Image (cartoon, rainbow, N blue to C red):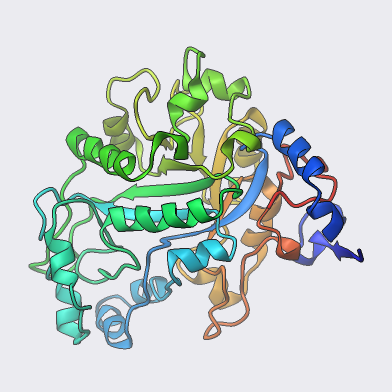
Length: 377
């Protein structure tokens, strides 16, 4: 078959030019060999930021801009459905969750009422049920592509079950505790240990053990999770394909609440963003690919998994600034998040994808050249 040449320099990367042929891509022996040799921290792939987020209406944005123009500009983006994102090659999703143990707390957001946007039929009924809810900002940005959290999980599981060969899918979680920016609005409830226990129950209720990669799976018989990571005990790609893992991206106080008095993360669903010296260290959020370049490379080399961002707050897309994107793609972070898996044509052509249509490649820091020109997905 005719070989397809893919030059990674198209994105300004530091990788060498590689050759991918349809024959090689479809050869089971090559894939099996790679899958048995590489581990789940030996990849690079692309994900989305606030993956559930719908675009705001012009009236809603105008309302926000009347109070804070910069804030309105920063949240003027949205995504297609989770399924469409996954079909397009997204392998990291980010979901914001709000604690709502009784139900109904967020059923009447003020922003749509003030701007005249009609909420979907059934919105109040969905929001009236107890359980975690999914949206961006109380009152002013309450729209979600999936609601409640268990519906997001159900959609992700359906897609994963239909695509069992996918590289491990990372779900990054923000446990939101924001106040409403509107006077008289409804802010978030705190995430205490009981709320996090409920989070773990909701995940385990939707995803069976064989679908999950948990901290216990990585730690194995090592004294701590960090020990396991430094020893290279992440699952192989063969073991990790078709599976899903969760990471809590929060500050030290919230992470400490989730961890509790555990030495590492025994019994928990999520990995946590924590200092590399902690016994619970396995994952890190380092969102500035240029400023954090040395830290990202050091963490990835040591064995940790890192998520970074190619863009934020619509700034790079508006300026067509590809510097952070290119630094992210070449810097070693395994998961690179963007708001622009597809371009926003209102702003220009800015987009973040791996070269040559690849969904996952060998990591440029951990496994440069290991794939021999073969995409991992």
